Picture 1 (cartoon, rainbow, N blue to C red):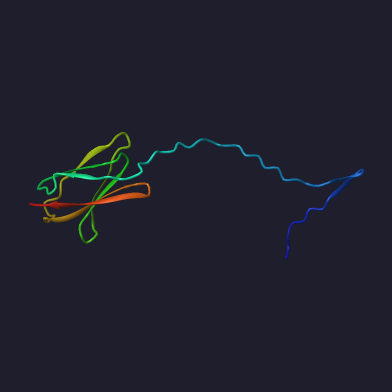
Picture 2: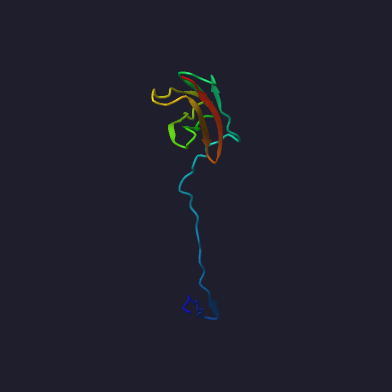
Length: 117
């Protein structure tokens, strides 16, 4: 097959062998975000009848699903601090069990909540 060959050149009485010099110059420093080691969710009240307050770590993405896997709601908690998000189901959503999922990075947790009209 074809390849790259280096052939030494002669200069006086010494052999010249080509060298590859690589210089690394960092272009910038990327700030790393600290993610929680675990994800915990609280939902209060549970069961609920008009709205539920969901607490999760800062920066977590909160999603609510029905039992068929349809995503009904999605919000992200600001990175500034742990906070509550409030979910008020639409009037057309029936009473029943719903799943809250909180995810940060590659960690996630789920919690069942019960909606009673």
